[in-house]
Amino acid sequence: MKKHYTITFLFVFCWMNTLLYSQEVRIFTLNDFDLKGDVKSCLVMTDYGKEEFDFDEKGYLTKLVTRYNDSDYTTTHYKYDSGELMEKRVENYIDGEFDESTSIANFYEIDTTQNRKVTEKIFSYSNEALDQYEYIYDGDNRLVSIKKTNNDGVDETVVDYTIYKGESTTSYLLNGVVQKSIRTSEKKKKNGKIMRTVLTKEFLEGNPIKASEEIFGDDQKLISETKFTYDTVTKGFVPAEKLQYSYNEKGMISGLKSNREGTEDIKKFIYQYDGEPHQNWIKKIRTPDNAYTTRKIEYYAQVEVTQEK
Image (tube, rainbow, N blue to C red):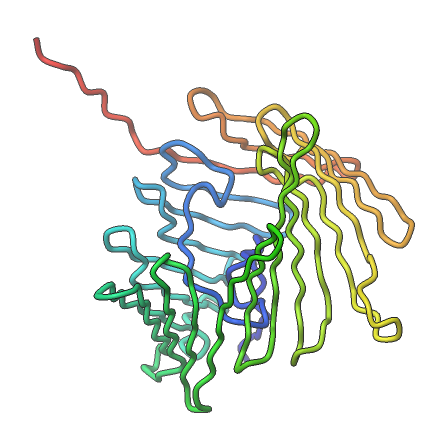
């Protein structure tokens, strides 16, 4: 009998199917994985699994392999054309065998005749049409509508943008019912630096369920994050956890202080780096529990060009 797994990636991508509403198509590059330079591949090893990343010479992610053990893994392939994502295939392997029933393929069509429109078609590996999404953009290239079509009918998510007293709010409404709102504001401190605050609220069937407030520094680094739950008795959001981040001279997270229900927890992160010129981290140690993550990075060979006299 084949085993069944709940697919859980070692790295959480906020773009994958974890939200209550649809999101636009996202392309992943080296920057999304704390990598820089001419990286060809990166093997990430932890005490609970492995992930393998392949990149093209422009820094786009072309392949991701998530290994749960030697015989159970998921492989995702990405194909591009002129910087646009054209195809994504998610292939699952169980007991070393390809599992057609849970593998899917996404195909993308780009239309820029007027305003930008992206059509995403999702098929099973048995060639069954599952879902189709249409992503519509306005003249400023902002996502304004997502239409989902399948055997159950058509659902539309409208994205609304408003500005009030210097604060910008982006709201996602599924068939007219709010699913999520993101309010962004900026404040200039006495030292001239600008602090950016992002308040995100999530709803289920129009009812608030949770929220988070993120504060970013002048260098766009996340300084603190407060997570809220919704109290149905007081009809308001109450703090559940607060996280505070600190960074080292290379811009990597060096400390994380969390406070949940009055209990404080402090974690420190120590990095080891590879040589010049890249200086990517190859080992990360988290204290006090001494958990670690290692990375094996392969680079594209650099061709030295000499100018003829």
